[in-house]
Image (cartoon, rainbow, N blue to C red; front, side, top):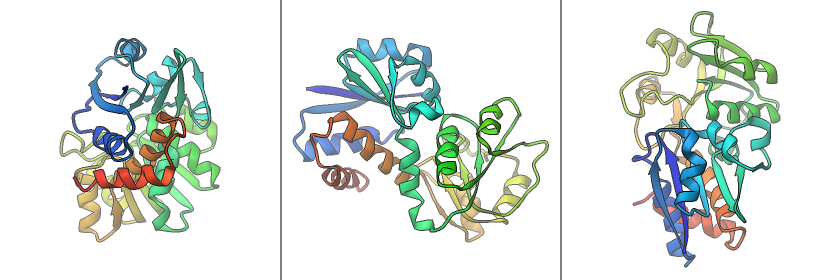
Length: 263
């Protein structure tokens, strides 16, 4: 039996085991998927091999460390330096990123998006910003401080810290921070978030499984919003395709994975 896992801190909330095990069970694939709470991202490679894993997903805050842990990077992950899916290929760790295309899957129903503001500057933000630019979407990024904004400036995003941000109109505002995951915090000061929400058509949060304070505020203003569930499904289907090395049909993977969201 093949063993897969998700690494993160925190990780107890993750739906990934339900999703992937639903595929393995429904499609009679001999594999199992579990959670690994990893506090120190530099121990990822060591933990992966100690557990004799065939593959893994990586969630916050270890996606950039996952990139460093790999022997080879393929596809979109090589552009962003951020890995959320790892495959054990004959003892070598191969890194991929399925987050960005998963998010594009999630926002299809919003229609023609031309301007996006991203809250946060971590691994998920890097992947999304780079992917949005590929589709000629104008991307702005706001982070608490200037420190992590260099990457975004280099690839052509407008960047702001909390200190120098001025509100413009956006088609979509996306929260990629962990604010609201374990607490009732907003991803930026209330006055700033209020102003943003008054100047956007749509709102999305990478966090799933709860109505974050950010989404509650959007809901109170009757803004169309969605949490990270569709993004999670989209990236999960792509990751599972890599896990099973194409042995299962993508449409079967998606339908089996969707069942897990009803559990």
